[in-house]
Length: 193
Image 1 (tube, rainbow, N blue to C red):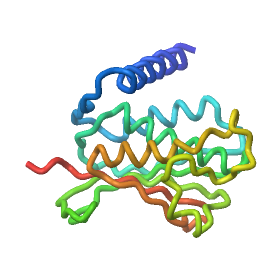
Image 2: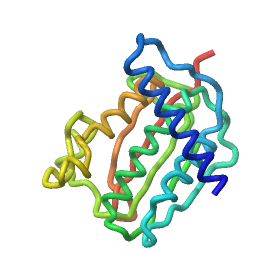
Image 3: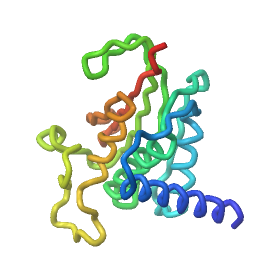
Image 4: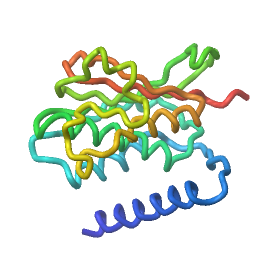
């Protein structure tokens, strides 16, 4: 109970900060060096509180991944949006894998970087049709427009993910998973010294 209370308080603080940033004067986020695994673990704990019994979350973390500069609350929101979409798409059955790696000599938005963090969120759900992958990160695009907007959202979650990744000079892409579902890949570079 104490752990859940702490999670709820931390999430309320994170959401208050997000609303303050949206409604207040626009200023850049506070990028600090953090461990991405701690961010993913916060997301995992939060999602597991509401996870249907037929869905499990697996972790495949690279222990050698260095700490990266990030706005921790923003990345938590991005990963949370992707994981919650995966849970919703899987209809109560399946596996979501959180996978971290360090990638070297990578080009992001036409610029070459020596080192970048790579987070893969992989599910074994029904996947995303190829014709929808090109627009999935656009605002107001929803995979299932027949769902009630009160429960299904407005199609802003993945647009927010893309905006957060761009604020980190990174990218978010989706591709078909080898498990048959979807694989969201988020990458952002280490700051150039």
